Image (cartoon, rainbow, N blue to C red; front, side, top):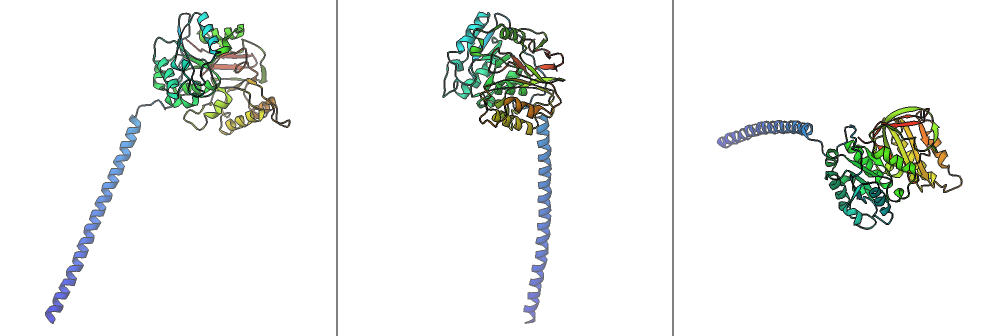
Length: 368
């Protein structure tokens, strides 16, 4: 009996000692695992940081705000015609005729002949036209023949690296605002809110003078020299790059990787067939997004057919004065650019000095 009790005590003692050894081993093992994990985490953080530092800029990176001036046109140059939004129609022939009569050669992108739903071909066809024409050294400029809708569907398919390395004129308006802003924001290339299609049919001298100064001269010029039906809403002076275009397309950039940057810039806006309350709503959205906080000036283009949906709605002028009235910057309105003749081209991204006292918006250079 005594022997059994002694053996029992020895067994219990052995179990207790084994438990201590096992726990000590677990503690050591856990410490080792934790230390190893922490080391891996720290290594991963360092590797990630180094990867971010050494990662080259890709085509989705914002431009560093350098201004790239494209080469101006001269007779004999080749202009590529594309339909980056709606498909080409009978009015597109007027643009072809005008350009040929001016001595330019004309080539056509696949989108010029294509149709997919309401577009000038599929998204890939329209984006490929732009990428290919920028990459082609034999093409000196790219002109859109149509607006409508579709640009926002292809801006994520453009090769901004190729565009930046092969700068050239690209021009259009209305829905093409999306393309002009995206290219300018991503590459720094000056783009052009310019005439297209039947805007170039039987054009008045004002439009042609604007065409010549904008696309074919490397000299400074006054954007207000072409016609004087504009009015001064607020006197002042400011300088900065011009940005903007069609108002609804500007608003459509908000919250995207292609969002318009207005800081330190002169904002140009125009619109067509939008009731005054809708114009007010779009301007209020831009205001809430802080897009008016650091402006250097505003150019209000043509707002054609800005009807009041209800008699109690503000008129379009009342909207402008209500939204912009307290801004301490130069503002002009009724500038003839937009969906109206005579169509005055506006260089997006070009440096400009605005002085309403002298009735000037001096474009430093739009082409070289």
